[in-house]
Length: 140
Image (cartoon, rainbow, N blue to C red; front, top):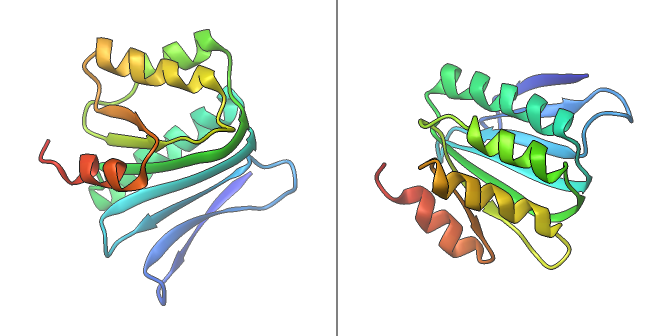
């Protein structure tokens, strides 16, 4: 179960895991940058991704946040290719996403980029953080 906590001192929402079986990621909203951030690690399932998407959409509606940065460099396992294709196909047009991957990121995550490109979704994969942030700064 996830819970959202607003930290006034640091000025962002934090998705905090209440139990050890919670999804292996940290989701935050940084109001000073107007950016939703996710750091994912370990084994991720389609249920994890779906729950994250729900939180992303909640933050999008609450703060009008339309930019998402995902650091997936520590992700070790991803959902199946079919689940990834469906996830990318249903990605909202009004949330621009940059996904940073590394050597340990499962290759299947690359299908998100292919699906997003084919469906004209604002989601791209990057190997360089600076390029990912530049993509997010571009006008929509």
